[in-house]
Length: 529
Ligand SMILES: Cc1cc2nc3c(=O)[nH]c(=O)nc-3n(C[C@H](O)[C@H](O)[C@H](O)COP(=O)(O)OP(=O)(O)OC[C@H]3O[C@@H](n4cnc5c(N)ncnc54)[C@H](O)[C@@H]3O)c2cc1C
Image (tube, rainbow, N blue to C red; front, side, top):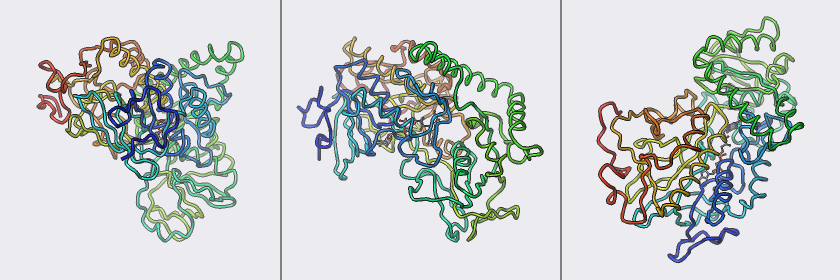
C-alpha cells in the first residue's frame, strides 16, 4: 500500500504522516473546472491548511480536456461559466473548448494549484471515522497500485458523468455499417471527414455544435433527431460586456456583466416556466427569420415539451441556421429502423447516406466519480440520503460535492459551494469543532427527485441520485440569487448543520434528535416516499 507520496509534487505543506498514512486538511477529488476553483477558494482563504487534489486522468481541465470534437465550445456565456474570482477577458462570450481549457489551466498554474495535484489517482472509496474525525480515502495510483490517504474534509468535484464511456444506445444493424461510427466523447484524432457524408444522431448541445462545425470540410452534414429541441440564437460576442470592459476595465465590467447575464438567464427561465406559449412564439419567430422561406419548422423545430423542461440549446450567431440556409447542413426528424451498409434507414422509408455516423446521444451520469462512501463502517446509499443545500449529504460528516445548475452556468454554483465550504471550515476553526454534519431529522420533509429535469441522462439515472427535500435547506434550488443568499450569507449554524468536536462517534455523542447515521435512516414519516 502506497501512501500516495511518490507520485506527488510539492504537496507536503501541513502534511502529517505520523500515523503512517499521509494526512491533509482537505482532499479534493477531480481537477476540472470545479476542483481547480475549489482549491483556489481554499488556498486563498486558508493559506495554512494543507490540501491535495487527486485526479484520475493525467491532465487538468476535466470536460474541457476530454472533449475534442470539432467546434467543441461552451453553450453558456463565459462571464458566468468563468470563476467569480478570475475575470474572463476574451472577446468571445461563447468560447471554444481549448480557450476554456487554457483558462482553467492558467488559473491552476498562476495560483500554484498544479503543485497540489496528483495525477493518475482514481479515488475508489472513502470511509469516515467519527472517532478520529477523518476520512480514509482509497485510490488507485498511476501504476494500478492501491493508495491510501487521510483527510479532515472530503470535497468531491468529480463532475457528473462517466469518462470512460459516453451513452450509446444499441442501434440495430450497426455492425453492418461500412463507414465509421464515432461518439463525440471519444473523437478519433485521425478522423478525416473531408468530402464525406456525415450523419449526426442527436439534437442536444453537442449535436447542434457539431453540425455547423463539420460543414467546414464535409460534403454534407445531416442532423438526425428523434424529436426536436428548443434552440435559441445568442450573440457569440457580448457587445455590452466588451464595451464595458474597454470603458471600465475587467474588475468592474466582469461582475456587472455576470449579474446582467444571470438576470437575463433567470428571466428567460422564469418566463419559460410561467408563460411557455409566449417563449415558444418568440423562439419560433427567431427561427423563421433565420431559416429559408417555407422551411418545415413544425417537423424539425417544434418540440413536444415546454421550454426548459429540458436544457435549452444556445447557438452562437445562429451558426446552425446559417449552415442549413447555405445548404451545407440538413435536419432529418424520424425514427431509426436500422443502420445499413451505407447509412441509416428511417422507419419513414427515408434513407440517409453516410460515410461517418456520429452518435451524439449523450452521457452516462455517474455520481461522485463512482466512489463508495461509508460512515463509521456503514455504507452510504445515496438515494436514501437527502442533499443538503444541493452540496452535502444528510448524515455524512465533513463531506461536500459540486453539482452545477441545469438551467445556468455550472460555475455559478461551483463557486458558491466552495465559498460555503470555506465558511463551514472557518466556523469550525473558530469554535474548535472538527465535525460538521447536516442532520435529516425533520419528519415533515417530503422526498423528491433531486433534479426536476427531463434530459435523457438525468431520467436514466435519477434513481441513483440523492433526494431533494420539500423544504429548505434540503430543497435543491436552481436559482443563483437564492443560493447567493443561502450559501454566501445564510447562517452556517442553521440548526440542521450540527457540529461536534473530535470526541466519540457522532451517532453516539449526538444529543436526542442529533446525528443520524446514514445507513440507519429514521423511519419514514407520513408523506415521505
Ligand atoms: C461537451 C460539454 C459541454 C459543456 N458545456 C457547458 C456549458 O457551456 N456551460 C455549463 O455550465 N456547463 C457545461 N457543461 C457541463 C460541464 O461539465 C461543467 O460546466 C464543468 O466543466 C464541470 O466541471 P467539473 O470540474 O465539475 O467536472 P468535470 O469537468 O467533469 O471534471 C471532473 C474531474 O474529476 C475527475 N474525476 C472524476 N472521477 C474521479 C475519481 N473517482 N477520482 C479522481 N478523479 C476523478 C475527472 O477525471 C475530471 O478531471 C458541459 C459539459 C460537456 C460534456
